[in-house]
Image 1: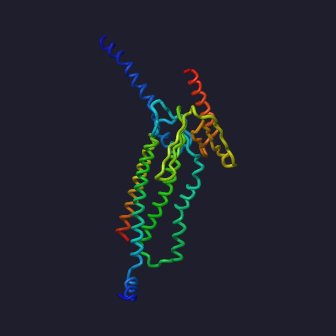
Image 2: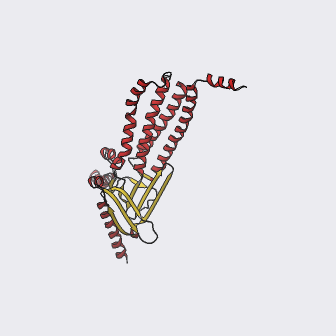
Amino acid sequence: MTFDQIMGIIAGINPFFIFKIFILIGFLFYIIFSLVVMRQVQLMLGVLEGSSHGGLSVVALIHAICVISLFIMAFLFL
Amino acid sequence: MQEVYEEKKQNPIEKADKIEIVCKPKLTFWQKLKQPLRAYIINPMGMHFESQEDDEQIVLLLRQHLITNLPWIFSGIIMLLAPIFIFPLLAFLNPLPNMPIGFKVVLTVFWYCLTFSVVFINYLHWFFNVYLVTTERIIDIDFNNLVHRELSSTRVSKVQDVTYKVNGVIRSIFDYGDVYIQTAGTEENFDFHAVPAPQLVVKKIGELIEKKEEANNGGI
């Protein structure tokens, strides 16, 4: 395969497709981060337990759901 | 007659039940609403920590003063409002004319998720980095980042000196400062950073030390 052919293939790729791949990889890391946050909130609640702290784990769960939804949205609509 | 006797017999039990209900640490809705934003709580109700001993009670729960959160609150507001100013600018400059609408929508949603993450992480950091003064110990719980936690404690009986420092205009206006707790021997010293009403904290710890000494002397 010559250099011109390789350049031709690269030129034929939609730049937004490459952008989509990068976005999806980024969102995968973001999902991992949100799961780490969720786990960390549970650990923190184990260290300092309070009657009014339960809402935090719910917020962390909603955050993780939003990030997973974002990934699905990006996968389907981009 | 039998019925009256039974009624009288039941009354003390009912009373006892009522007393038990009153004594339970139950927070009102308003108290619950305010608690996540409080930095100075005396005798916090319904709160426990990891290594709490059976006869140990939390006397004081301290966090950094609420005002210390202003930098990240301000960043959060800027991040929240940024799209309102950036979108018209991008529409005017139009750097990527062929960008599909899907990208714009996804990136906007991502931006708001990111903003929420920043605010939430900072809030968690503030909320769980606490200083506890209990009837037995002084405890410092640190979560430096998401994966690092540290719990250090010392016995109240080991405390030798407690001082505080309030320096600067902002600290004087909002009445917060640092409390320094010196301990005996090789025990590590404790610094409570930017806690509200440091003079009251020092007073409270002083009272606890006195009580402990009195109890020890009485025991002898």
